[in-house]
Amino acid sequence: MSPNQPVDPALSLAALLEDDHPEKRKVSEWARENLDDERLFERDHRSEFWREGWQRCADYGIQGLVIAPEFGGSGLDLITALLRFEGLGVGCRDAGLVFALSSQIWTMQMALDRFGTDAQRARYLPGLVRGEQMGAFTITEHEAGSDAFALTTTATPIDGGYRLNGHKAWVSLSPVADVFVVFATTDPALKRWGITAFLVDADNPGLEVLPPRQKMGMRTTPFADVVFTDCEVPADAVLGNVGSGAGIFSTVMESERAFLLAGSVGQLERQITETADYANTRQQFEKPIGSFQAVSHAIADMKVGHEFARLSLYKAAALQAAGTPSMMAAAIAKLAASEAALEGSINSVRVHGARGYVSEFGVERGVRDTLGGVIYGGSSDIQRNIVARLLGLPKGE
Ligand SMILES: Cc1cc2nc3c(=O)[nH]c(=O)nc-3n(C[C@H](O)[C@H](O)[C@H](O)COP(=O)(O)OP(=O)(O)OC[C@H]3O[C@@H](n4cnc5c(N)ncnc54)[C@H](O)[C@@H]3O)c2cc1C
Image (tube, rainbow, N blue to C red; front, side, top):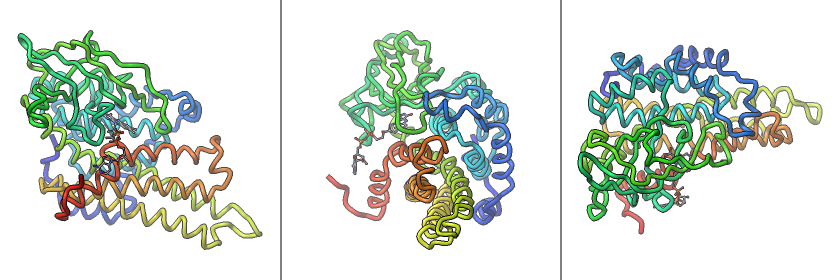
C-alpha cells in the first residue's frame, strides 16, 4: 500500500502552506454538492447511518484513496489522501459519516492492507473500496480501554484454526460491518506478546453484534458491542503472525493518530468561516458582534487552534510517508486536532448565543460530534503520556 509510496517534498510543503490546496478544494466542492443531506438533523436525532452517502463516497473514490489500483483503489500518497480527506470534512456536515469513513480507512483497512496476505487483501479490499462491504476494528473491552493490551478475549487453538470467546466494546460501524479485525490473546500468560489479530466475517454464527448504543455525538456512525461465543475461524483468518497483534495495533494506532482527525480539522475550517460570517452579520448594541473584542478573539482562537492542528497533522503524515519515526508527531497531531476541534465547537456555540445552543441550527451538534475525539484513538491524556515518555519522563503508576 501507499505509506511507503514516495511523496514529493514539494507536495508536503504545498499542503502546509496552501490553505486552499486544489486537492482539498476539489473534494470539499464535491462533498458540498453530493453529501448535503437535508435529512441530517433527523438522522442525527434518530442515530441513523446514511448508507446512500457511504456509497456516494465509495463511487467518488474515498474508501480507496490509499489502496493499490489492483484492489480497486487510487493508490494515492499519504499527503494527497490527507488533503482529500480534509476537504471531505470541509464539505460534509455529517460528522458521523466522515468519522465512520475515517474509522474504516485508517484503522480496519490500514491493518488489513498493511499486514494481510495477498489472498486476504484480494478477498476483502475490493468490496470495501467499492462500498459494498464495510469493516470494523475492534480491540477495546469494557475492562481494557486505554490499557488495550489488558484485553481478555481469547483465541484458543483448535483443529485447523481458532475458537474466539470474549466481549468487545464500543465498536464503530459494527452494526453494519461485514468483516471485523479482532484482537484476542492466544496465550494470556504472554501478555502483549500473546495478542493476535484475526479477520472475522460478520456472518460467522459465533459473532453477535448487540443492539446499537445511543451516544452523545457522531450519532450517524452506528456503534455497538460485539460478542464472540465459541466463534470458530480458520487458521488463515490470522492477520499477520500469531503473537504479532500488539505490533499491528501499535502501527495502526500511529497511522490513525496522524489521519483520523483530518475530517475534524476540515469541519473546524467550515465552522470558523460560518462563525465569522455570523459575527459579521449579527447586530447587538447597533454593531456587528464581531466588532467586540471578546467575540473576535474567540474566533481568532479557533483559527490558531485550527492552524496548529493542521500543521501537526501534515508533519506527522509527511514523516510517515517518508517512513521516518513519527510517534511523537502523531501523538501531538491527535492531541492538537481533537482538542482544537472541541474548543472550536464550543467557541462557535458561544458566538452564536441561543442559536448556538438550540439544536435546529446545527451548531450545538459540533460540540457533541467533537467530544468523542478526545477519547477514541487514545484519549488526550494517553497522547500526553506518549509525549512525556518520549521526552524521557518516567512512566506514571
Ligand atoms: C466515538 C468512539 C468510537 C470508538 N470506536 C472504537 C472502535 O471502533 N473500536 C474499538 O476497539 N474501540 C473504540 N472506541 C473505544 C475507545 O478506543 C476507548 O473508549 C478509549 O480507548 C478509552 O477507553 P475507555 O473508554 O475505557 O476509558 P478509560 O481507559 O477507562 O479512561 C477513562 C479516563 O481515564 C484516563 N486514563 C486512563 N488511563 C490513563 C493513564 N495511564 N494516564 C492518564 N489518564 C488515563 C483517560 O484519559 C480517561 O480520561 C471508541 C470510543 C468512542 C468514544
